[in-house]
Image 1 (cartoon, rainbow, N blue to C red):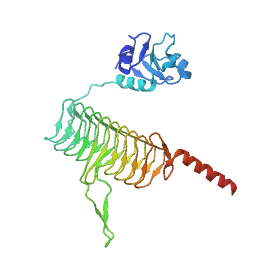
Image 2: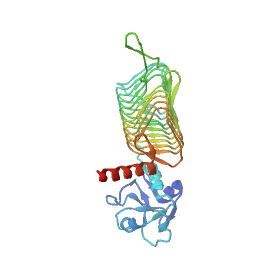
Image 3: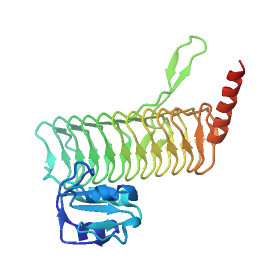
Image 4: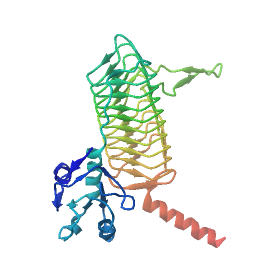
Length: 331
């Protein structure tokens, strides 16, 4: 949708220099921008390129505060963040259907709140609740008793098992599976066979979580798995049963978490990280790509980066690599 620059500046907390009545429709890169687009620069060295582009307006940092230009400029302490917020504001709002597509199968006891929509070939089981303005994509399977909050976007072919609850404004990308049984078995020492341990717990996903495509999150075995408010999970992430993921945690693609792991608030896990059962990752800890954490291990240190397998503070890890390199030269 269109928005005036003054409206955008007010919404993102930026100071506007120039014509506030000018309107833009979307956001773009400096190279591809048109007169209807908004661009951003986070560094002063790129400012001239932005001003010489076809963009209708520029979001820039405080380095542009005294700029004299015919091009409107929005000044922000955090231009990339302001740009992201402006993009959401300008995001096209297509006219959306409500209710259910004629090919969808919605149980008579399911509840579709005002503005909710169930797309073609999707199924919604008995007693399930779909919140206001939530969109269930084509081919989704929402099990009996599942609860989904308001303003959620569930993309096509997502499967949500029973005993799963999603909060408000949750985004689930295509192919994700939420609330499936955990990988838990008990071995019979006499026969060597494995018997399935009960997987009767629940999954709770709090508000403002985003879950990537083909990500899988197991329900708790006897209790619950919980994903905290604002967590962001990339594509192809697996979270095992009974895990507790804190608020604003970021987990990159192909990371795998065993059962009963605690990830505290604000932690960041790089791609292909592997964590053993009952480990705890402390608040604000960062684990680099392909890092490995042994079972029952506790990593603490807000803002400290860990690397390698077993994961250790980056400085220590680099020292070990340097020592190994010196040993190799001696050979």
